[in-house]
Structures are given as structure tokens and as C-alpha cells.
Length: 189
Image 1 (cartoon, rainbow, N blue to C red):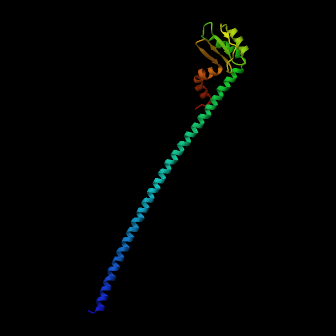
Image 2: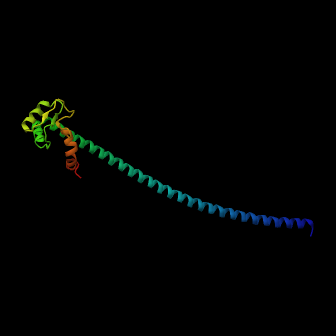
Image 3: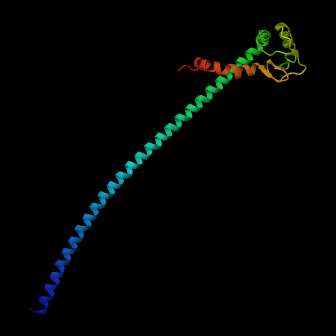
């Protein structure tokens, strides 16, 4: 065989091997491309699922937060209405034609005894309180000083002080009892 034939045969075998390697390479590249496409699609689906899941969680949190804010605002507004109702009740007590009768009843129901009991009237209500004290028949002494209250009076002895102001009676004694009933009337379920 001539050198030329040997070279051609080597070249032909080399070309065949190169073609085979090239084919293997292209097959491996296609396989890798396919695997990458499958992996990319799977990763994209997983990310879409996570985004959907997380956005659902975020929406639930936002909805819950919005509901809580709305309830808080509603409760605040109801509280303001209740405060207004009790403030209006106080004003009604103060301006009613029965103010003196209310004082007389409070005095008659007071349990303080002794010679040292003093009645301190609401500022500006001294005369009507003096008249109510006389009508009640209680042996209390009228004080020269007045209390900074809107209506009612304060009973005071050396050891005890009882706040019979209309504000105190409404807020401390009656409000807890009446609030539920007033709320049921104002805000039926």
C-alpha cells in the first residue's frame, strides 16, 4: 500500500471517529438540553406553586389584618357612642326638673351617721343642695367649700368620704350594670 493510501485510510478512519464523536456529542447535548428543559420546567412549576402558596398566605394575612382593623374601628366607634349616651344621660340628670328630688333621694339613702358628717355640694348648686338637705331631714352639716363636680354632692366625715356626684354614680355604679343593656338596645345583633 502506498503511503497515500495509508494516509487516506487514516484520514477516513479519523473522519469516521470524528463523525462518531460528533454524533455522540450532539446526542449528549440533545440529552442535556432535554434534561435541562425538563428541570427548568419542573423548577418553574415549583416556583409558581410557591409563589401561589405564598401569595395565598399573604392574602390571608392581609384579609385577617383588615378584618381585625375593621372590628377594632367598629368597637372604638361603639365605645364612643356609648360614652356619648352616658354623657347625655348625665346632662339629662343635671338639667332635669327633678334635680332636687334626686339629691333628696341620695341623701335619704346615705348610711353615714355621726355629728361630723359634712356635705360638700357641686359648684354652683349650693342653694339647691341646701334645700335638698333640709327636705331629707339628715343631720348633716353644709360645707362652705364646693366640689368640682357637675352635680350631686360629696359626703365627708373624719374617716370616710363618699362621692355621690352624678358622674361617679353613673360611671362607677350604674355604667357596669347598664352598659350591656344599652349596648343591646343600640347595637342589636
